[in-house]
Image (cartoon, rainbow, N blue to C red; front, side, top):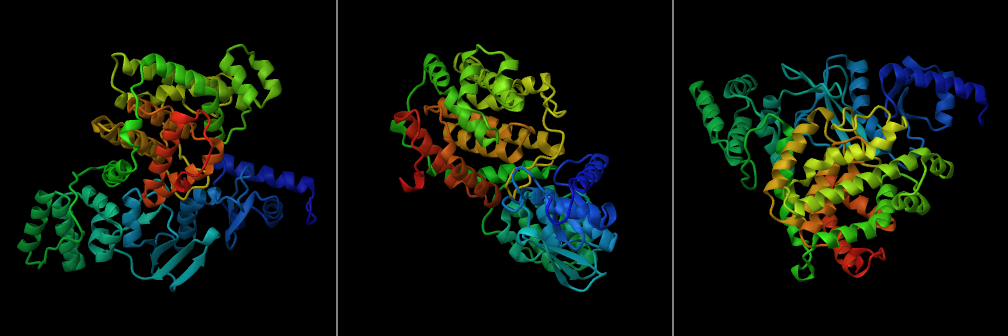
Length: 526
């Protein structure tokens, strides 16, 4: 190797790193504390070969050697919250917490990684810590709330929910209305809120909190809090902190409330991008089977490529033809690519069966999201049979963190995936517009990432099942449009703006009527 590092030194350094990751039960995305876990002789080779990347001081994160961290911040995004918790714990022990606003954003299941994260601590002067990719920590010298809560997912220290809502500025409600409403829906009983307001002297904050509860439809809790405060001679001037009322119910799970609020916000934008009705058709079961048979090879090539697999046309053709021998295919392609192609073919056929069942007397197409775990089992079966599934459970929601390559969005905590899918299920079943189900079903399945392998595949399969139900054709997102499609998904994940994604799906769907193989033109330039 260059820089005077021998292959022997590089190998020894990699062995030391792998031992640390094994001890922690982590793979990539783990934060490495260089001064504590690795010596300089071990760090240097790992930095040179782009395995370790500096965060600040002697802190490093493990890069993604497949995508190269200087081009793709995925590994940093995966490491971000672990680094924040470990770094602040080492510097300040227990004398720190996220700011009130950042605590609310985190409690609201906001999956975005903040460009600037505000931290409160009495142990340091106010200063900024520069981090990779333009991120930074703003360390603010200030007292902590009387009580600080510890969260289990990453080990962060947060403001208690009720104190944070009382303490935030009025701008938080208007700049982050979805997060504010989500947190209001999580509030416990009146006693703790009233006590926190009185103890902190939050006269104005209590007025906003009570007004906010009325705005989201929880008048009973609002009246109970107001009564408790006035009985304690605590003056409160009630005001609605939002620009408009949105009724939600109380919920113990933030992600369920968030998904319902996102759906309410996104649905009108999706409807505005719907293709014209006159282009729709009524698909007979035989036509659906014929169309899916015809489109499988193009669909598999494009969809597997979007998931990062290098699958050649001859492999897909052989698997689709049904006359193949596993060992022979593995001589011509990587074994993982062979197994996942076989698995996708099986999953695709199961989707076809489920769609035809819904058209011939089974449960309606709006229920097809319930079949995702069965599709996942079909996809994973060849990987499991040949020891390539890396311990993933093939018929269950993911049991670990899930990250999206290149995304600033952190998917739902795996413990909350069942609650997220339950909330999504209720919305899909109640939705009578197939195009809305197609677009928002795709988006939320991708947003939640219910399974570790193939969530993107199943999001597109569900999308197509609903397009067919609405009279649109099976729609393939071609490989040369994959990047633009992913950018529209990322925009929706991070900003909540769904119009670009809906427009692209509509455009590709309409062009599927006239051209089995799409020309890949940008729909926004058409």
